[in-house]
Picture (tube, one colour):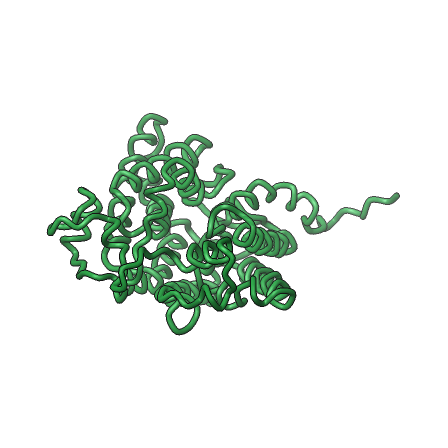
Amino acid sequence: MAFWIASSPHNHIQQKTSALMRLVIFATIPGIFAQWYFFGWGNLIHIALAVMTALLTEFFVLSLRNKNISQQIFDGSAILTAILIGICVPAIAPWWVTVIGSVFAIAVVKQLYGGLGHNPFNPAMSAYVMLLISFPLQMTTWLPPLSLVSMELTFQDTLSVIFTNNTLAGFSTEQLRTSIDGFTMATPLDTLKTSLTTGHTINEGLNSPVFGDNFALGWEWVNAGFLLGGLFLIVKKAIDWTTPVSFLLSLFVCSLVAFFISPDMNASTMFYWFSGATMLGAFFILTDPVTGATSVKGRLVIGALAGLLVFLIRKFGGYPDAIAFAVLLCNMAAPLIDQYTRPRTYGHDLERK
């Protein structure tokens, strides 16, 4: 028996789950390559750890549930979830962070609810939020772009940091986050939020080297990579364009209005688009056919709601990036949104008042 992902009867494009998952995994390559180029080997190592942990967890849980292991373990869903976790975890985070997140995503968020197609929340984002709340220090130790790191970080050094918290030469994680100018670096979103809360203007905050010449050094190219992969998925009809377009347009409008009202206290619209996990969320998270809305109107509403939530959390919330929180809130709202945006059932008269 093959598994199919489709919103019958309105969507007539059906693909085997494994084929769809392989296509989505292939589309993540440009973004992952940009992560490797600007931030080193860390995320590739975490992706490998997450994939191994996810497959072992899926095998163990399926064995306990007496399910068809060979059919379900290789449908690609666990691998894709693991890749998304590996992408989202900081490059020099400890190994056990990825392992705990992968086990939680597969065993609790996915299999506890009945497996693929039954989980109400996105497994990767649920795991990310759990890790962020439980281990905030480890989940906020982001490495600055390699061009700003004061020491060379090889593959062996990265592996040593992930498993021992120190490089082969004995440098700590905190020392790696120190730039060539002697300042401890954070992500562009975190740097800008900290700058604004300490009374600086946008222009003063943008003087930090983490912003580079454009929006967010390194992160802008990571987002461009996931944008390229997302457009590839739309062309291949693997995902519907409505959710990502609605999300990006909503985020654009919200940030543009705020910028017009107070340009000294609000970043540009392009900064919101090309920093953090914006493009990853738009094309690879919100488009999840299991946890998102099924109708066209519902997908438009979900995207617009997510864009609004991302802006509000980034602007007023306690966490710099907001994709994971926005996704989970939209997952909660998806059934209600579907209820009020479902298309008319043909063959039935409209209810008369």
